[in-house]
Length: 232
Image: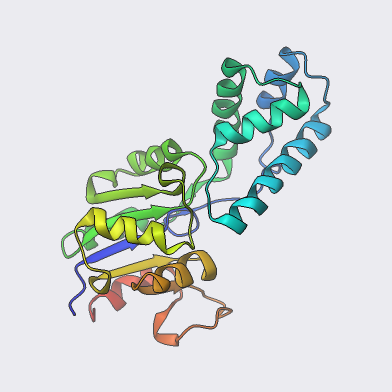
């Protein structure tokens, strides 16, 4: 059947990013905590944040239930202070995300590619994220959000990739059939296996050919999808 819809992963596909929760540097987040009489020094703050984050990640990977940045902040503050004042938790989320964003950068040609594809396909984004505004903010900044018929995030749905449920939700929201949809991502389990498990054709950005997928579904880069798209 003719493909009518193309859906994209966001982090690692439309933008490059660092998944680290420590290397970006978080002096403002630490200062916020110190002002709230948290006695953790900087290294201890990062260590505890990583410990709490990792525990939530393990559970999310097991259940496919997504957690929010507010849940992470609450869990961290309960460990660090024994309480999680709402105003402090919200401020910590805002400050931490602003610093984490230092590790996000645009991929050359990504926005222009979406503009060209929008003339031929209905476009959408399906992204795992702990903060929906983070994804939408970047899409707005890139100037591509008006090109997207749907932006589906795991934190809003409560389910993360590779669960077929998030892909099925996106397809249904678009009023499409799975066999008319293509998904482009950069992660084998979450993106490729998740999408194909939901009945979508998937392409994986895998320049080092590490994933066990058909060569016809492997991309050297995001921009390589445009040539493949002409045969869909």
